[in-house]
Image (cartoon, rainbow, N blue to C red; front, side, top):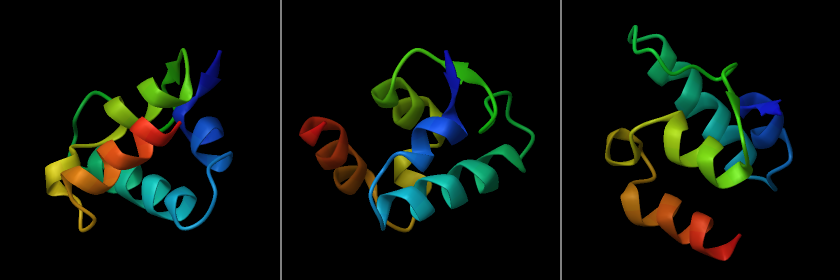
Length: 69
């Protein structure tokens, strides 16, 4: 298995940078899920990496990416 960070590194820009920044920011809130947790696949990495609605990009942006994978 890979970590979320490893999966995020495989994303094209601007998703790569945004996902990493969002996950790091989310992890700093003290929540259990962090960027270095291992996950089964890229979709799970994105779905569990941060709260979509709390990001600058918004919920639709991230669901559109997941649906395109």
